[in-house]
Picture 1: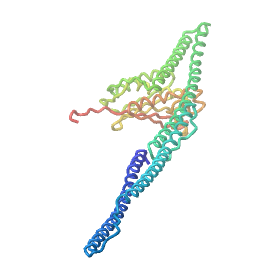
Picture 2: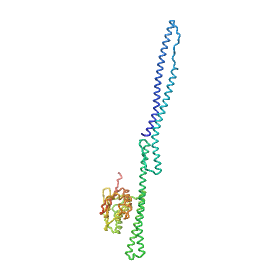
Picture 3: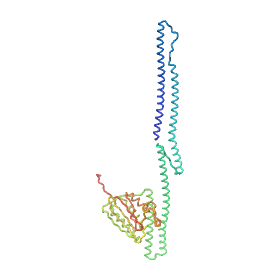
Length: 400
């Protein structure tokens, strides 16, 4: 029962109980007065009859020696006063008992849940969240207890998420340290080779310099990825949306990606099935990051000498769909649903390949922020197809 309802009921009881008691007192008093008045009227009538008899006797020569007994209201007033005192005492006792019962009823319904909330607040202040706040009623304080319990559950979830985040962050730092040491060690080795005269031919010198350049690019890519990841974690991704021509944009992207794949000894095939005039609203730099992350992921886990990547852009109604397919090792069916989760790596072999588990989570975040969707289809030993869609830009008539 709501606290407001309890107060209204208490007010009505306190208001109507005295009225009922006073009404009963007045009714009883009225009955007593009526009784006494009837008695008094009978005595008056008897007196009048006696006087008539006396007068008749006097006329007849008879003498009346005794005076008639005249009734008086003075005999009635003390009885009425005594009755009123008894009724007043009864009303006072009934009101006192009623007020005490109502006070105990409201105090109990308020004090018990408040004590529970006080205990819960002390537990939270001490960092103890292993308790429950029970609420059995339907009043406002019970609703507050339920809200308090919901807050406690959210605090538990938040604490668990923070612990998980701290664990993942420590793991990420460990992986970063490993990933930075590897290219730095390679760069130092090749520089020492050049300094020691190991690269004694122009061909070796060119190969050493290219390797150093590629390792430096890997480090630069890693730093950029971590910087972008920190922006994702604080929801401060700098987007610059505008209209982009699909055909021209992806042709430029593929040309840039093709140069990097060629240096890695892989082949790239590209096919566009979208009309030349199709546009999308997108951030070109971030979509390029999506493509580069997917391609880099494919290169990282390529287990075949003749590595191949196919990029297909096609029209699917209100969307354009981009498919990036490789012929790498593939992903198992158990791992496939989790590859876009932050810090997830499918197995130890992926970990040894230098995966930090944030590349595809960044890809998913960017695509979803563009209003699109991303998914993957894979078969172990055959390869993986990464697919994502972007909504087409359509001119809306002014009258609509």
